[in-house]
Amino acid sequence: MKKLLSLSLLLALFMGCNQKEETKVTPPDPDHKWWKESIIYQIYPRSFKDTDGDGVGDLKGIIEKLDYIKSLGVTAVWLNPIYSSPNDDNGYDVSDYRNIMDDFGTMEDFDLMLKGMHERDIKLVMDVVVNHSSDEHEWFKQSRSSRDNPYRDYYHWWPAEKGKPNYRYSLFDEKGDAWRYDSLTDSYYLHYFSVKQPDLNWENPKVRQEVYDIMKFWAEKGVDGFRLDAFQFAAKDTTFPAFPDGLDKNFTQYYAMQDGLHQYLNEMHTEVFSKYDVMSVAEGAGRNFTEAHELVDADRNELNMAYAFDGVDIPKREGYSLDHFKEVFSKWDSAFAKKGWLSIFLSNHDQARLVSRYGNDSEAFRAPSTKMLNTFILSMRGTPYCYYGDELGMTNIGFDSISQYKDIAAINGYKKVLNQGGDIETYMKDLKFGSRDNGRTPMQWDASENAGFTTGIPWLPVNDNKSSINVASEKENPHSVLNHFKKMTALRTAEKTLVYGAYELVQKEHPQVYAYTRTMEDTKLLVILNFTEEVANFNLPEGTTLGDTMINNYEEVQLAQNSITLLPYQALIYKIEN
Ligand code: NOJ
Image (cartoon, rainbow, N blue to C red; front, side, top):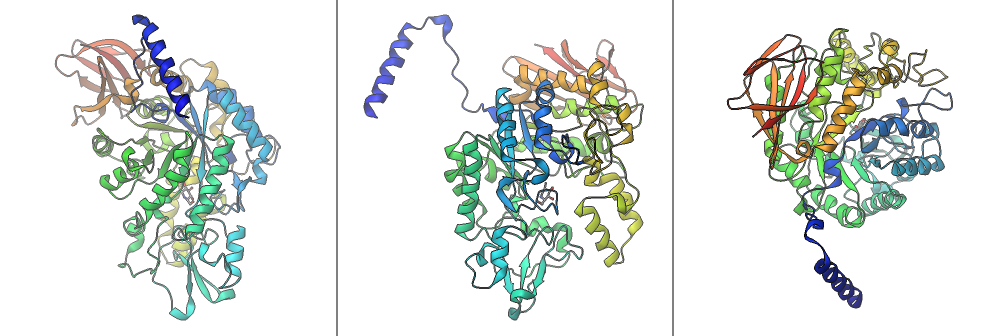
């Protein structure tokens, strides 16, 4: 080993001496990482492309669309869970972590898909769902079978002779109760999500080792990253002390970031992350900036990045204020300006559609407002996550009847409101606007009956607006939302100022416009976004000389000497001359 080292040192010195001045390369900045420069495209596999006519998307469908994915200019794919699952929560209830769900195909399909991605320089990020498993996982079957089964401690059990355990809130339970009584062993088990998603006991080192082995199995296959589902809830105080009433409204305060969590992440880092060139991202970023830093600061050897919910929590059915929007994103940016790294996203499979929530999905403004929102996501500091269909401007489907919903959160939430004698009308209104099913309708590939998604009956209806909002027609239209998205990914890839450059809010008080600069070394970019359907006047900051227009989501721009009149939802990016 020593010999090898000294040989390579000699070689390096020799090459160094012979290197001509002009061939010197700037050493890579250690803070520059591939995952910071990535543009991540999130695919909800159930809804992307079906190749066998069962109405459910599959891995072969993704393989078929790899050239499309590449053409978007994205550099990585995050895939929602594809492991074996009884699908109580569409794959977030895993029954075998080393197998592919029947609906989605086989391990052979997976290997081909990964190979196809790597051939196109696209990385793959897998979803790791280990706060809980499915109740149909062999571990749970064993655990449930008797109190002295070796797998008993893989989950959280509370013997009934100790009385009813202290209340814990469940997100998906019809009664909101996270404890389920099981007569087989006269005990309660814990499930923060549905009754079919029992929480794994992370305090048990055997469970942790099982998870690391599973992650290594996928890392050995060559996957490039892991997204840790609901992980901030994994550590628990197993004495289950009483919490104050009203816990449901603010359960994160009590559930998140419990003692032990950092130790587990540290261990995961040693066991998995340090051994492979993989990125890691957690769902949830703790309860405050300090906790967010404790998850992601590089010197702590835990995760690369987390994603905070503040941004996706902004919109309400009644609308939201631009002030609040600016405040949230500026606050998070400044908390991470010197250290740590963020994710930037406005939508995913747990949210309704981007344009329906933050923009304007009316016929007149859907296209410019989606383009404006995609400009925002792709011009902020942090790794951008773009959700399938948002590159087209897909919109909410807006179901009216509970029978149309497929999502367990919607269905059990409905039962809970009924159980508690709540206001069902308001619940249905909120659901129509904010339900997760809005964001899960099939990808709109073309104008045909099922939008080219399936030849069978789609598991969730296709949105009627597929006749105008679809890949085939948007590809041909140079002014489409799709082509604007591609321009933005190309710009972000070419212009590293958009990745690493400092962010500074401009004209904070402007009621219609969100403007900011991104600055790195000699390059300064000015991003100007009209968030309203009205024309907006924007005075350029004193001393600003506009250079090249890098992005404009309209064909024109009304520029006077020191001001710009922005059209509804106009998005502009300029180079600033020094
Ligand atoms: C967060 C996931 O994003 C969501 O879809 C899922 O329902 C819960 N975690 C439970 O796994």
